Image (cartoon, rainbow, N blue to C red; front, side):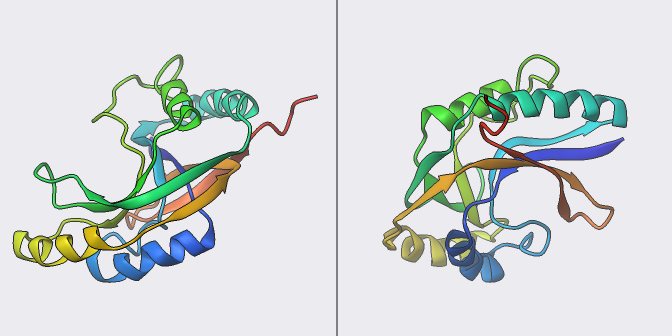
Length: 173
């Protein structure tokens, strides 16, 4: 059994901007690049993952590339001391997440889908208070075209690496 997850990696300029904060405020900085989680980590054996890859290819084929807008820094307080770039919800992201929680996929979602790119997490209350105001006042405006998502797996050291990439709409005739 291995742990897998499904995510979208934004373009390099957005990753660079997120990493500018993550280096200082995210202890998981080294483990995974900035991303939008579509499906949280789940355990699967090789047979299951091969079935899920077939499903993921179908899902990718049904979606055209689309734009996302990142509009501000927001937070998951008071639940956790996490700050993130807010990705405006859109139909394509919702569709992807819905599809990855039905059929052969495990149905459980730990929490409602809030599209975001984490820039700070696991902060102490003091640290969180210090940086939240500054980051939330920051002007953040990005648009990005998303044309793929990645199936990731977790290595023994806790880091995540790409298992397979799924490009949108590529097998349409």
